[in-house]
Length: 367
Ligand code: NDP
Ligand code: MG
Image 1 (cartoon, rainbow, N blue to C red):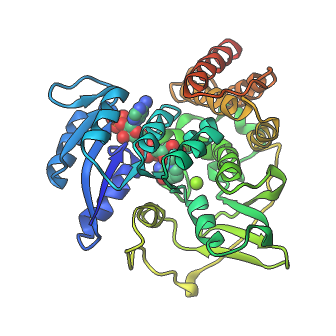
Image 2: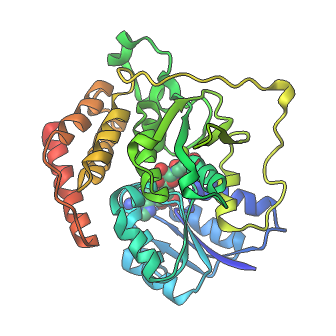
């Protein structure tokens, strides 16, 4: 039996993980601890249902439970586990990833912001504490599987698929009037609000290109993105001989989440029915999705640019979600923030947090 902690247990990733565990009591996984930010009612109900031993509220102080990020660290130390699922949303998830690796636990990582903002530092921590980082993001989980047992030199590029989101074919002249509801209506995936907006703008794919670069050691020019509206192919790799290998499946996060937690699973998702399957592809239109280019530029800019891309985007998405800015303004804010000089490379978690605050102030000023 593998002992696990699920952070961000009340969110979309956490809920998917726990609903698989609810249905599949045969899986050799025992929920030891859980975290949420503020959602007390839901976390207590989950703790009760899964008989977890410890709880942490990272946002609010709740009597009798661990709280804050210090509390999260203490919980991970006092209640040992084998692996932690980090399903926290946003930049703060980095602090959790650092705590997990410092405790020497393997990290099943959904929180892509950790890799984008922590970069090399995260992998150094993993090496130092002899811990593994296993991707949960569906594209990266697919590539992780595809690269297994293959020589790195034999692979010429990674191909990330993108659904194209809700605005793949919307008339460009109507982008001024995009509402929050329009942007949240993702055609193939059910996810949290932040990542749903990022899928509409393709900032999510930009973050994933950066994530893939750090996880697998490929430069931006060896990471391709192609639109594949059905979201059946989760990602592909191109080998030097010209062949392309793909992972296919119905869009369901259960597979990447559980695959990261245990290799002992079977029949996780419904089998693909080839009698009713159509797969199509489209090139990316950079005028429609300018933030994808912005993400590639941030990756090649190195230094603090990837972090700056993430921070500016988080600020702009939050403002869009609370209807303080329009969709075009969201895009504009990220682009203008990236025009500034972010060449300084943060070398510690403290420097990363300080730079993140600096970028956020700049983005708010430019909004
Ligand atoms: P949600 O918004 O649905 O859930 C976020 C979870 O994190 C909640 O449990 C929330 O607690 C908690 N949380 C929110 N803010 C903080 C904070 N500052 N510190 C600690 N905990 C916090 O997000 P998703 O599940 O959609 O996404 C989680 C991560 O996984 C993101 O990084 C996303 O990019 C990534 N991901 C998600 C996918 C998906 O299918 N949803 C697919 C691939 C990657 P509370 O409920 O108390 O607010
Ligand atoms: Mg993804």
